[in-house]
Length: 231
Image 1 (spheres, rainbow, N blue to C red):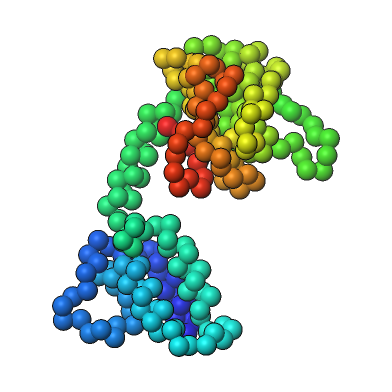
Image 2 (spheres, rainbow, N blue to C red):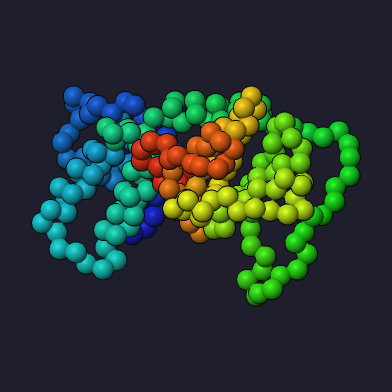
């Protein structure tokens, strides 16, 4: 049983599971196993769960019998399906293409120039000098820089990085994963809270400022576990 489950979980990564064709064929026998449902595109997550729990209804839990492996798979799959249990491949592709389009439009390349290390050049503890998630440049003032740290908050420099001022005393969450500045009005800013990748801090949501970072308002986003980019 364990080998079958591990194989099925591996197949999930590359297979076309849970497509929009989620209706059970009229000539389909009612005793299709949940293992077979996972490998077919005409069943969704709800179908698999119903078949699995029906089988386990009167089954006593025994260590290493595959139950915990299924529960882990079930928990993981919940992130990828809609409210009906369907994995919409077309929606995933659409979001990915949109992401690439916006990513390209936000990239700029310098044709020349020299780079200079700004530091820090040493550290005072065995934990190192910490990490930086994002550095944002004021579109209209080359002296102004904004910096977001995974667990160290939001910082601003008005002298090209020579000195920094802390700007997130009012935040409930000290992690900053991304910063976006309105090019037409630099007083309008958006900050994504939480750590971008390592999970040092969880997100509190998306914050907005209309006075250049002096005060912040949390935007009413729902079901947000992590924010990695603000486009």
